[in-house]
Each structure stands twice: as C-alpha cells, then as structure tokens.
Length: 148
Image 1: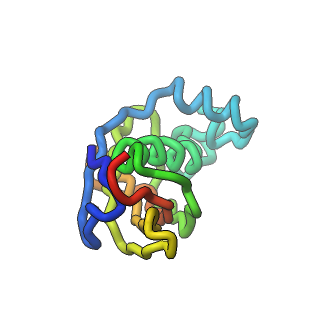
Image 2: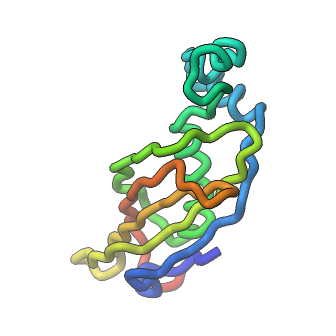
C-alpha cells in the first residue's frame, strides 16, 4: 500500500495491489445490482452453447469496479477526487475462480496553481493468476501535496 502524497510519487513507479478471487456471488450480485441481463453474464446453459468462452463471464465493469477498489488501497487518503477514467481496453474474459490484482504505473504528474494539489495520471492493469491482462485503463486523480 503506497498512500503517498502527490510530491512523493515518481513517474515510472509501479505498485502492485492485493489479490482477490472473483466468485460466483460477485457476478450474481453485480449483474442484479446493475440490472444486467445479457445471457453471457447470467445464463450458464446459453453460454455453454453459444458463447465463445463456453461459460458465463464477469461483466467488464465489474472487473473495473474491483480494480478501482484496489487502486483506492494504493492511492488512499491523499486522493481528493477522481478526475477521469478512460481508454478501457477489455482484452480477455474474467470468470468465476479467476484471481485478480492490479498493477498501477505512474505515467504523469501536473502541478495545480494553488500549490496544495497536483494531478496524478496512472495506468491501471488488471492481471489474472496466469499473467494475462484482461483489462487496462487510465485514470487521473487530484492528489493532496504535503501531509494531512
């Protein structure tokens, strides 16, 4: 867990989060909460017959939500606001039983004129238990300078 002030981050720094196994309950709860009804998320028999993955998969935004929690654990208490999340690239399925962690790479820093804050830009790579990256996206965050 990094939990650094804006000034303490260095461009190119890489952080690894804790790992979390995706469960059947995660997929069921998320699809119910979000109102998702695509058979690839909720119907195992349909998925066996018609899906290229031959089983149900986790919605991509579930994977992104879990990654956001892992990111929060790294950026922590010095985060003032999320300014943007973008360039989502979903390149592999996430299934119940997959264990994910995130790799956060600091890609940019920009000071804010009031001298108390800065904008940190990071690449968030979600990595599964075999080293495959099913999701990668970028985020910009307003970060506090100096200690609390």
